[in-house]
Length: 343
Ligand SMILES: Nc1nc2c(ncn2[C@@H]2O[C@H](COP(=O)(O)OP(=O)(O)OP(=O)(O)O)[C@@H](O)[C@H]2O)c(=O)[nH]1
Ligand SMILES: [Zn+2]
Image 1 (tube, helix red, strand yellow):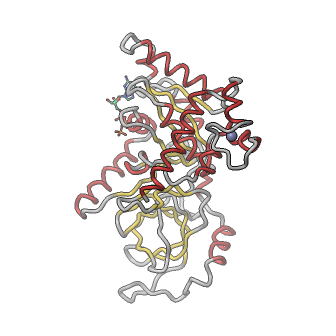
Image 2 (cartoon, rainbow, N blue to C red):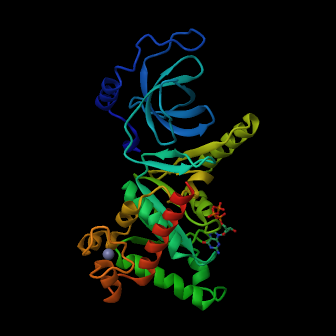
Image 3 (spheres, rainbow, N blue to C red):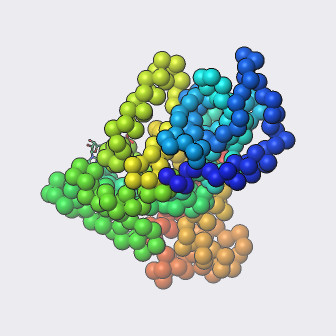
């Protein structure tokens, strides 16, 4: 929780940075005078309005209020730390604090839009049903590496894995994936949203971080999040859904506080965010073991497909690069070429 609060010095710094844009005698659209500047956290986004939680150190329990955006401000997303001014019933956002990370996804026109800010961790959720695909996991890992967001692999539905319900070939596949990603140095956590196994380890990982859960539909993301949140937080989600229905707008994303510390940002859009906006160079950076050897190839523009003295192909040959990772790497680079050609 302490992480969410800005010190007076931090607020002063934000104010200083934004001072050219700030007009100290700001009036609300209806001409009313606004209150002094306060620090806030954007916890939900509904169309042209955002819901803000106060980050004032002197507040025992943070307040929540609806805010409008100042016209000159860039887009504000859930997770943003902002400065706002208040009138009787709502507020106006006057400055955005620089972000440590921004999650983006393409809108329906293919233009990249930010969907969440200041995310520290990506919880890549996997299960034995639906069947996992390493290609999708590698896409998420590549995005996380490039955004400098820590990826954690969550193997859910542990109960099914230990039962006879799952085909042994799929159980083996899951076990192999776990071994592969552990050997690459990624943290893997086993959970069962159904009976609560592994949730304590997950709580430790989520504590004091802002996390986002991603993964195929049906792996259990909502089930896990619900297990970790008190009823009151869920009720807030339900409330904003109701507001959205009334206003015919979409909630882009919403931030929840875990009772044990740490936050989670969730939305249908975030769960599906993909990779295609990365360049081939970024894809290389996104595969941590390829990143380290790609510079050793004989040719600087090596495509790692057929060239002589290719360090990547040599690594596949000598077994130090897993063939599945190599295949996924090539497939992603290829899919970027397809997109570029279409674009
Ligand atoms: N046996 C078992 N079933 C689970 C577990 N976790 C979730 N499920 C079930 O799996 C189904 C899908 O779970 P959800 O939590 O809706 O999955 P999701 O990933 O949020 O799916 P989307 O909302 O489509 O992204 C539900 O029927 C859950 O009850 C688990 O640990 N064990
Ligand atoms: Zn090469």
